[in-house]
Length: 81
Image (tube, rainbow, N blue to C red; front, side):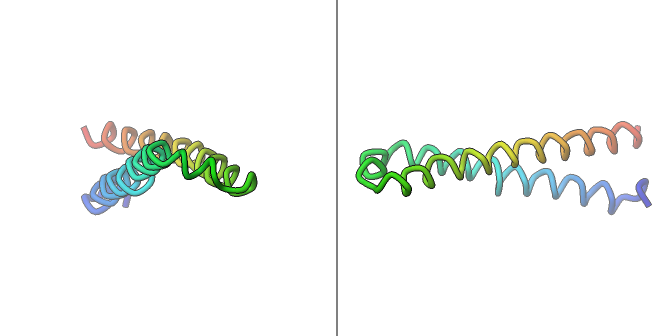
């Protein structure tokens, strides 16, 4: 099953989807928070913590999983050659 074309396509689609939905959109979100940081400063302390800390934690988790996806995709591509 791991040598099928569908398995490879699935791995590539997961890689691209994760890159767009979890990595690039988070980069855009951080940029957006940076642009509107004056509004973030007007929030209550708990709101500021939520706006800054929660996305940072989620980004770290996303990067860890993305590294695993890349490792798996490389392994699959290496076996196909």
